[in-house]
Each structure stands twice: as C-alpha cells, then as structure tokens.
Image (cartoon, rainbow, N blue to C red; front, side, top):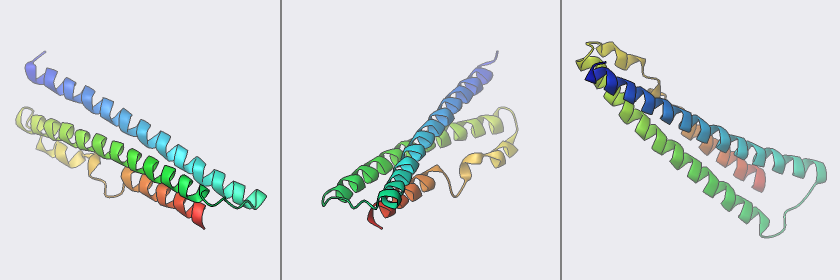
Amino acid sequence: MSHTTEIFHSLETQLSHRLTKLWNVFSWSSGILTSIIAGIIALKKTQKTEFEKAEPYIISIVIIVFTLYAWLMIKENLKFEMKIRDQIDKLMSEEFNYPAFKELRPDKAVFGYKHVILSLGICGLAAVWL
C-alpha cells in the first residue's frame, strides 16, 4: 500500500468517526429537546397546569444551556469534518488527479444540524412561555 493510500484511508477513518459523532450528538440532543417540548405541551394540555414562579426560568435555563452545548458540539465536529474533507480534496486533486471530487461534498449545506438544534431550543422556550 502506498503512502498516499495510507493517508487517504486514515482520512476516511477520521471522517467516518466525525460523521458518526456528529450524528450521535444531533440525534440525542434533538430527541431530548423534542421530548422536553412534547412533555411541556402535554402537561399544559391535559392537566391545565401552571408553573410555579421560578419553574419557567429554571426550565428555560436548562433548555438554553443544553441547546448551546449541543450547538457547540455540532459546530466543533463540523469544523473537524470540513478540515478532513479539505485534506481529502487536496489529496484527490494532487495525487489522484480528480479535482471534481470537491463538487461532491455534502458539507456545504446551507441549513443543517446546527439550525435544527437552535430551532428546537426556540420551540422549547416557546412551549414554556406560551
């Protein structure tokens, strides 16, 4: 196996790890936020429950901290993913003479994981306060 091929396989392994981690962070955080939203709505609808004075603030702080943490984790993983993909692009262009590989990159999406997490956080706050 050539040195270039070893590097390429190493980059593929790193990319796979990052994509798995990215999906795991997104799936558990979106699931938790969705559960919080559904729980608050169900509680308000079925039991006509009013929160005590401090409860909306406490729940809001939890939602904000959790949303921010998930957003930052996703941002960090996307940054690493982009760096790895840049290295793969460079390798594909220089070593394998395949510059068109760059056009196939899925990491250029305008709306992605970070936006969904922020949207769920905002919906969670709306469920608390409305």
